[in-house]
Image (cartoon, rainbow, N blue to C red; front, side):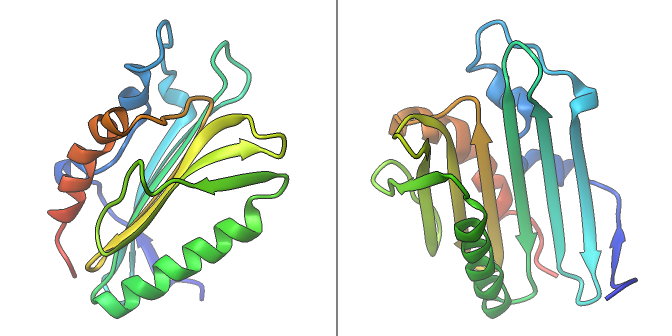
Length: 171
């Protein structure tokens, strides 16, 4: 549906709610992010729902790293539930020759969430995948090149961002 979305300005409140490469860099000794390899957008739909999307990808550098973080804020919980289910289905289809190993014992958030170790078929962990829904908000995170398997570290990385997500205004 062409013309149903528009790019809108990113607010400081939006910035506070998004996990960015700088947040991962503190866990990677010697890594210096290149801002030109990141993107951050906010789009608004006709129903006033909106999405924040941040990405960073550097597969050629000394530290090959990928980060995708998105927040979808829906006008009601039913719409958020549909977005969350669609996100989970899309991830299942798109995981290809890798596997997502659910580890909700390491981290959970909101009304429904899934925290995974992202692994090769041979079982080598190379990243994390997380999707969660709380009320009208849906969060998706994909990280490769670094991974977190310690609950304390995961909470240190995500808790502040997810608290900020909870404060984002609902349309």
